[in-house]
Image (cartoon, rainbow, N blue to C red; front, side, top):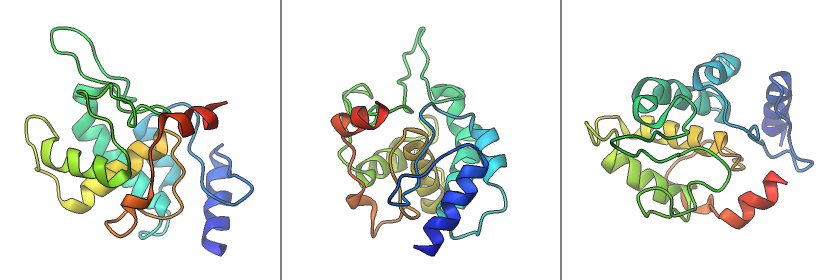
Length: 165
C-alpha cells in the first residue's frame, strides 16, 4: 500500500491522478512517449513507473514509426492499426485480434513485433512496452507487468468505456 501511495504522489506530480483505492490511473488521452518517460525518470528501477518509462522509450524508438507517435495508427498504402486508447486492445480493430488480457498482448507483440524484426527485443523489453501500451490506454495497473500477473490484467472494451466516462 505504501508503494502505491508513493506511485500516486509521483503520478500526481505529473498531472495523473489515482483512484480512491490507490490504484494507478493512466492519463485519459495518450501521452507522448518521450515526454512520459521524462516525467517518470528517476523512479525506483523495479517499480511500475520505471517499467512504463522504459516501455515508452522503447515505443518511441521501435514502434512509433509504424503505429504513430501516440499509437494512433496510420493510414495509406499500408494500414497500421491504432494500438493506444481506451478499449482499443480489447477490440477487434488490430488485425482482427481481440486481446482478453495483458498476457495475450505480450504473446502477440513478442512474436510479431516489430513487424520488420519480430522477436528482436528482449522479453523484459516486451513487458515494458506492453506496460506502456496498457498504461497509455487507461488500463489500471497495480504493479509492474510480468508473467506471474499478466493474465490477471483483464482487457475489456466495456470496462474501458466505463472508465472513460
